[in-house]
Length: 598
Image (cartoon, rainbow, N blue to C red):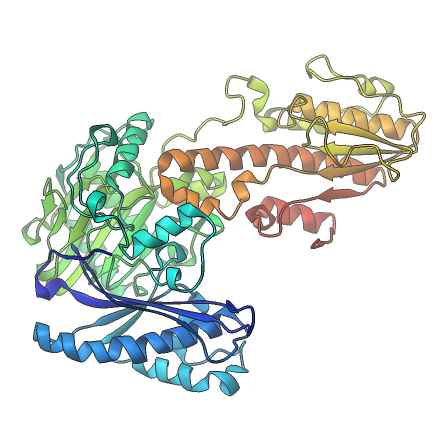
């Protein structure tokens, strides 16, 4: 385990990470507490202590177990250490306690939880005590994402090597012989400075540079360029910022208050938050100011990160695409924004200018006194997953988006856009001719259904799918497999499937539909994969775009099957994000389908 101190004492604070593994002990069903405490600053990471301990009581839920873990962290590790560090640094320290369970954070902030009333009988003292402590000026509770939770490694074992290495990197349990070395020439340059897991590694930076070179985004503004802002619009924006209440920062690298307006992302994907719709006047003014400063030069942004009294340690904005633009407001001293390599900065005397910079490179802002607001305009990588209506809503507020990307499926095929022929497909005549396979679809012809009792259409399956194999249960059932060969994302594939369904109806047979649309883009692990860089995010976006094409055709085919009195089914894993897609939810509600967990 290694540690380093690269900051003055004024920039170093105490940080504690508390985590719990629910019912980790198989014998007693008790949970395991994990605690990690370290000194941290913009360029400081020095481990102090760690705890891995079985809890003394059984918890019913993860929030309960997290409460016990946080109580141990604060009572046994943080508070005793504060007296020492207050004395050594000759000032009152502010200790930050990191927790990755949002329900637990809410309980500690409010001191109660109406949905878990049994806590008054089990964890009442812990809840009330933590609520009181986090009201004190020397303690701060901050939510931290699970993949940045340094206490995780002390709660359970790991069966996957990659996850274990990531957990070790978080607490700097590394090989010192290689950790401090500069990357090899093939890995993309950079210094041998230590890399925080929350920052992009030298290898990751090289990958990001490659992605940027391949990006179709075109800018004429240069990195480090400073552009003057209209004084009137800037004054209006400053007054609106003062009237806008902001929540506490959710990101670990930032202190103070702040939120993201416009296009943002949660665990379910890209969305427009309620705070955006409550701050229309502010966004219109800021976007008008940015557009006027650019004076028609190409620049894209769909999000505005608004910060109040915020100081950021060295970090990277891994979800950004292209250039970002920074503007500052207020009456303060200090607080210079700077790139970690010193390539460009924006100081107090340049508040009337907008700084263009690359947010995927390490940057930070220094401490200040007074009142300070900052606004960063950037393009979030999830913008491609916004619906056309959502993009239109943001464009009305003055945001500028790149042209929508082409379909990731068969880009050179003019038939790859389902909407182009949707009306034609939906209105196919129900005649004998509609049963004849189309020459445009490179598929085998459907068999005659006269010798079958029922027909099963298997949507998106393999040539030898298990469901379609012969068995004692499949007697009298004729299976029509709709495979990759049929290309169900195209109108030709949909026409073939509709012809098969209508052929079954012509022969007086029952027809049912089973859907197995690929769930790759909706896998919960894609939330972690999305952090690997723009290239990975584009692949995820391509999977989701393909899903929309496949599901749109599935919905048309399902409507036809239901009209004939058949049954339709759709299967994905329980945790798949597609179940929460508005398109799917509308389909389930329209046909009054039942959700069944198997």
